[in-house]
Length: 163
Image (cartoon, rainbow, N blue to C red; front, side):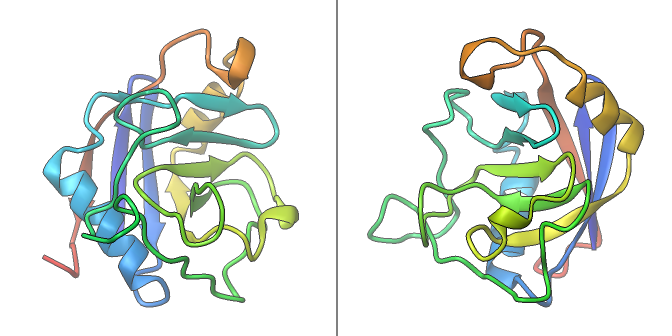
């Protein structure tokens, strides 16, 4: 199962771990399919760390999951011991503490072992590392906000197991 993310800097193709993290993948796929992420920005970019997006408000404070919950559309972590922030290109959910996943996600620029057990890893980049290289080189201003707008233009889902 994979998704191509079209950015204004090129395409990034990610493979998802649907069997290991079904709820997280279902959420990401549904948000991609509905156009929820279309034309949103990557609001946070930290060289040698990660790039973060998935907030339709562009502030880093917004975003909801597809799940109807009592906690503002947030859902529980799916931490899998074998899925680690062990390399460049790991796709993971952003959160504001345990069990607070919504729509925001990040892609690592290198291994980040300090994140293991705290954030749900649900995929990894399989193509588009050249695009990731371009994104990492974009300068930032206060709050790690890129000085150039980085857009998540749209996504193409390849064989959605939840559809």
